[in-house]
Length: 136
Image 1 (cartoon, rainbow, N blue to C red):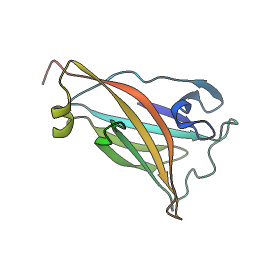
Image 2: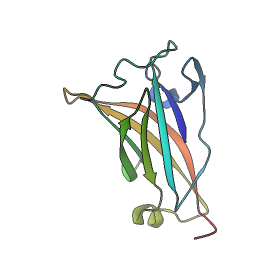
Image 3: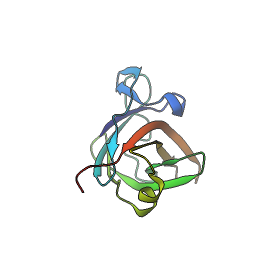
């Protein structure tokens, strides 16, 4: 999963097409049971990288859950690697398995940054569909 986040935009509209393309993007469905490789690039909204890119004193976390119930089903810390952040999301957790009561579930993907001064900011929170898998 490749993500580009416009850090100048509202977090609910910050998933964009490219570093220099601020048109809103959407996420394809993901499947319960998978482990998803995630790459995120953070834009300043003007076609360049966000000012925090590569700074080691900030922590960027990605998570999957339901903000209405404040349920977090999977999360990970992202690691910086040459203008991008990378991580894996495990979509095979017991909590998520218990939550899925139909063939699909609508959840949210969220990315937050914790700055060195302990301020935490949500950079992205967008809907994503989880589908049950057929082959276990």
